[in-house]
Image (tube, rainbow, N blue to C red; front, top):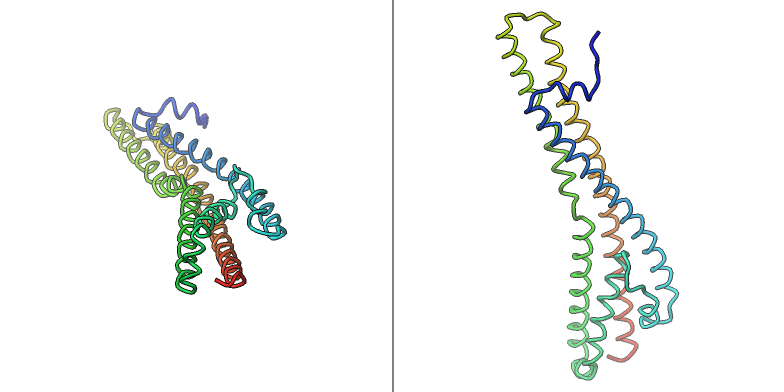
Length: 231
């Protein structure tokens, strides 16, 4: 009776097939590490974003909101707010020049503020998307790596059959089954990588849209303050 044990098959496989399986194991291990890290990061950032937005919209002014914003945060809205607040302070230092220019000065100030916040949003987005390309690469390449191991294993099996001079099922089957394990391993590594890549990409895209909406709301508030101040 054939003993179908993954460890037995691994040790009985050829050197090339072993290297393929070890490579796939490395891909799988790092992929699951990325999945774990992204889960923690997105869960934490979502919680901190909800807390920040609750605090922000109940604050009397930007200064109070800035004082209550944690220095260490993963909330995209909080991070772009900090950048926007710092840029707004720079604009306020030249308030007299902006007053003299009235509408042109207000437009320039808002444009600088929007660029600063968009730049911060892009940096946050890049950090959240970091390592996701590895999941995409794993999902697209792992099946082919496994297929290479299978093809090589089958070639080796037929080569040994030629030397032995016997093509009975008892001789062919073990080698073929060992070779096919590489393809199965490639699919086993690729399928979760593709699923989680799409899942995280969707979550991050929603997060980016929420952050852009916050930037738009923040700019509207700043513009209203400028108008109310008679600038």
